[in-house]
Length: 265
Image 1 (cartoon, rainbow, N blue to C red):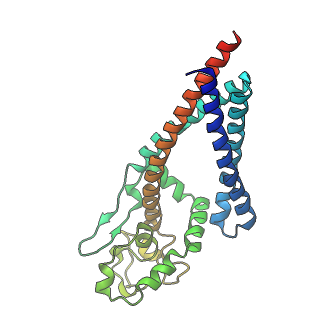
Image 2 (image 1 turned 180 degrees about the horizontal axis):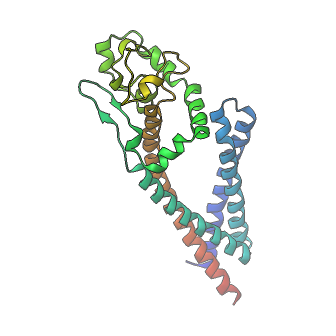
Image 3 (image 1 turned 30 degrees about the vertical axis):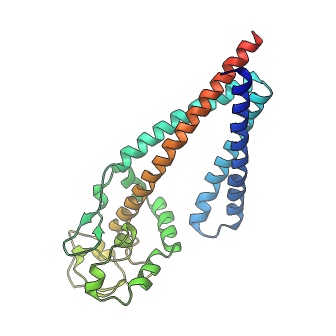
């Protein structure tokens, strides 16, 4: 690849990246000012960091390529290399921790149920931490996932309800476990028996109150993890595409850096 072609191509790629970083940064700043829920506040800082990082790195690559600043190109390539290594490591890690666990099929039921012990120890520890789970639970309550669930199925009979296909979070957080053998009155309204549920502590945790339900149940944590697994698998596909693009840009950058050295020798 010629000196001019590689430098121009690298400059164009980084200019496009710089333009993309602007709306990301603006979105992060807007979210930090307008955030109301714990969920929204949790997202603003990572978005701002990503936006600033992309802006700085793309500027370094653009100036280094177009102005032939060799030390900036070298710094840009080092950062890109670290980013590629971290991306590969992160993808492998995500695959390992999400590879274990799945919902359990129930006879005569349209939905599955979830057990925390079926998932990776790393994910179990994350949701078992009280501070982490408080933030996650706040997000689930703010999203009104169980309120919508209640409104959607409130007019169904018990037979109709048992045939419904529920999401992992709806199954784990919005209704009691099948082990409890509660009497169905409504999707979020169940009559408890008088027994002590030794085999499943979630039965004692359940409450018909819409603000409580089973948000503190182990099944809810398991349902959240299962939902997270599905999201991470989609992110992994995007991440692999992103890594391929990074490697292409890195290769172009290496050519530009090599040609820059040759032009000065």
